[in-house]
Image (cartoon, rainbow, N blue to C red; front, side, top):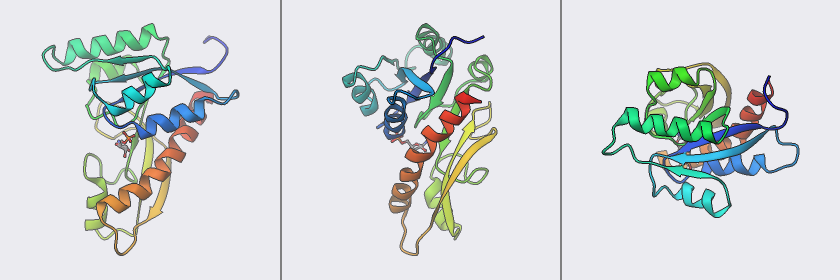
Length: 192
Ligand code: GRF
């Protein structure tokens, strides 16, 4: 049996961390089903890491450069466990986790991806949706498996693609939905 109280979530980021910020904001109400126990990054200079540290959140930064992926992931895993993390939320984390890491956290890692999965796994999702002539785009929160942007989709949000859209304009419209969707799906996930 897990202890009473909010589920402890660890967030992994690589950059600006706007999705991390929306997860943090939603965790700060008294009735939140989760709390942020750690924000960790593979990029010690990630803007989101400074934002989290300024707000008094526990942070951990380590670059895999020079130490290799196994040692890097072992250190991240240890930091997450020491913080009591139960569920990991990837939020703009730009590295593929190894099968070993994913198996250790089986079914307990979530990711947000800026497309309507299973469409457009990987990078440049917005440009690819425009190029394909799609009428709509969106974002998906899914369980992380060993395959890139694969795994059970837990929730999606759609936006229209407008005639004058470029990738930047579409990304901004999708991002608004990401910030709404991720806290909502994470809350449902930790309650289930
Ligand atoms: C988001 O669009 C997310 O869906 C994708 O990378 C971007 C990260 O943005 N995986 P941010 O760091 O959360 O601002």
